[in-house]
Image (cartoon, rainbow, N blue to C red; front, side):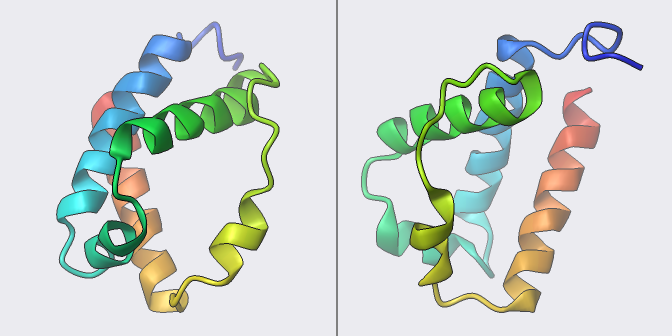
Length: 95
């Protein structure tokens, strides 16, 4: 199945990202990790939209290096599992 067949475009990515990062901000386990580091969500959201567009649509809009920034975060497998759970639930509700 192609991306066109399931109609993923920048609008779908933006709606999903808005929903996902909104949920992240209010999550009792990982919300504080984000809150302590992101003081202005709009620029961060724009970077994430570029990132997801690059990953999903191969748009090449994102040219950053996310691993160095994320590698120093105080997270463990439990935090990442929660991130994945929120991501999966968001994707399923955005379809």
